[in-house]
Amino acid sequence: MTVPAPRVPGLVELLDRVERAVAASLTPATSAQGVSRDGWRVLLMLARGGGRSMGEIASHTALPAPTATRVVDRLVADGHAYRQNDPVDRRRVLVHLAAGGREVVERVCGSIERRVGTALGAVRTPERVQLARLLDDLANPDPE
Image 1 (cartoon, rainbow, N blue to C red):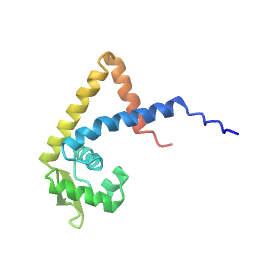
Image 2 (image 1 turned 90 degrees about the vertical axis):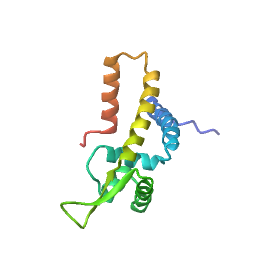
Image 3 (image 1 turned 45 degrees about the vertical axis):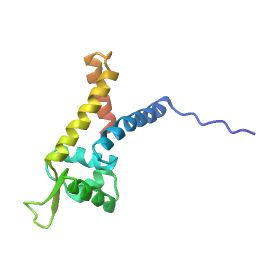
Image 4 (image 1 turned 180 degrees about the vertical axis):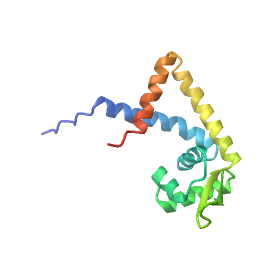
């Protein structure tokens, strides 16, 4: 007796394919810059500005605290980030994006944006804006 395959909703399959396409684009681009995918996530977070605590970094990247520390240690050693005492609470250390990290973010983002721009070349601007909004909504759902 064979068990029927579960029904996979089209959206779930599409999201899986998109995730694999993103990984296929990002992994070579970040690797070429000597940055791991976890390191890339930290760099993106730091690129939004302001210093971040290790707790914020671990939470945002969904990394266990020891792993987040190792990732940040590597970014600091490579000149992509630096640590500095929090000016408000001297007991707290914040991680900031260094000039080398900013350069990595700009190079990787530029590379990916060119690739996506080529892939979406036939899509008109209003549809691109709508797609960007939909992706943003998907990435940042309203808490209910």
